[in-house]
Image 1 (cartoon, rainbow, N blue to C red):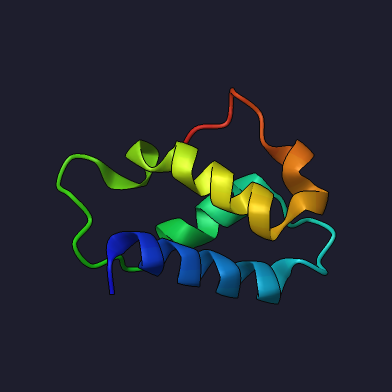
Image 2 (image 1 turned 120 degrees about the vertical axis):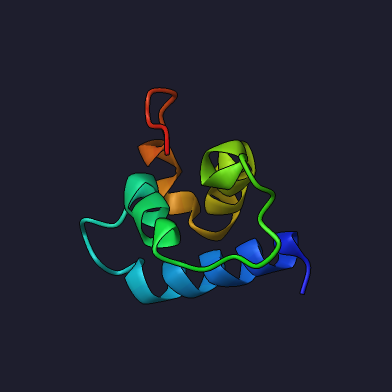
Amino acid sequence: MTLIKCFLHKCDKIVAEQEDKNEFDFLKLLQLLVDQEFPNLPPGGGLSAKQPFIEQVFREVCPSRADSISNDEKC
């Protein structure tokens, strides 16, 4: 599985599990992603390097919570 497909799969799974919870937002997604294992994640990049992509995925899979993304939230 490619890294992008892995991110999409894990984000979809997390959103499906968490979307009905009131406290679920973009920051919570990032916290839950940190606990996941990602094969082939480039060294030195980490999740912070993928944040723009993760934001895009979050907006697509959870549009009702897209307003929880702000520029000052960083991994």
